[in-house]
Image (cartoon, rainbow, N blue to C red; front, side):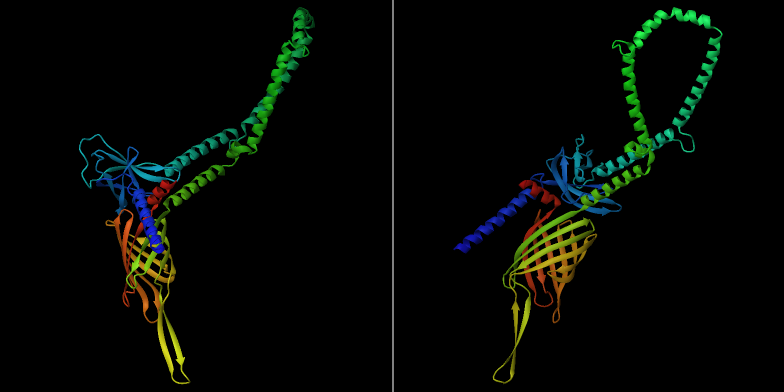
Length: 457
């Protein structure tokens, strides 16, 4: 009775998980009938099946498939029938966040005529992180041009620096001042009396001037001038220090003036950031879980799989398969009774509750997939063909070579029943003793996992 209760509780838990997954990962645009449209774009980077289609910022559909047509990408998508897509509507590709997650936004036009089913919708490709990095590169070109012009003004190549020329001009001015002073002295020597009278007339003015020139008088003009000159001296010292550091290449401005390589390094850094962001954005994953039973003894079969796509045409497959019905082995016994003839007995034994691992690398060529590595903890290879329009995959796998029987050939078909729900049929050891396996399960891509994680968080 307790075993029956435990089994009933486990079954109820599985049904709850499936229902919750269907609700969360189903098309977030809602329930209802859908209308299929198509569009063609130049670059489909960051866009995958189930990428959402939004109208006025709200999910209204999703992408069904992406195919290569010539040198461009043909996208087939579906939109809720209650959303009226008119003939002059426009589809734009937009990015979210720094990592460049993309979605498609439809701007509905003002035409009264509705767009026919399977018609093409005009698309406009917007800018994301790539456009930002490109603009930053253009800005750095302008900065480099300004720095080069500023450096040419302060220290022209092949010419004397302007500051040095100014100092030489000041030196000439001082020499001219000395000559003027000598000439003035000669003039005064012949007119002493006139200058004495002039000095007497200026005595009163000199007294007042002496008062204002007295540094000890707080109200004198000299005190004010002294304070101003002190501030000016401090400012000139700071300015001289700044100019000296700039000419010696200190600080950001100094390095920009002296080292032209800095602008190139900044541009290379931005290019590296762009490359890293592109790689991270292109990594996609697919998680699947199947459970069912085989026909040999009605034993259960469960399989977990994780596909990692560093690029659309390459992937890595990691998986675990558990079964109550393990591989078959042969036990040979030789018995001698009372020194008589030997009796040889052969006994075939199947292991129970085994765990088998899948570690494979694969490559996708159009609708074909070729993969190899560990298949159920033994070496092997496989070929898959994908019927993308109907969500079905046919596979042939060869693994577990045996001396007396050869390879274990397994044929399987993977069919999408609805949204993330899949059914699977497998036939193992086709050319020896066929074993049929029927399973059902769930398959999640990145968009489904985001919705599921967002539901819990």
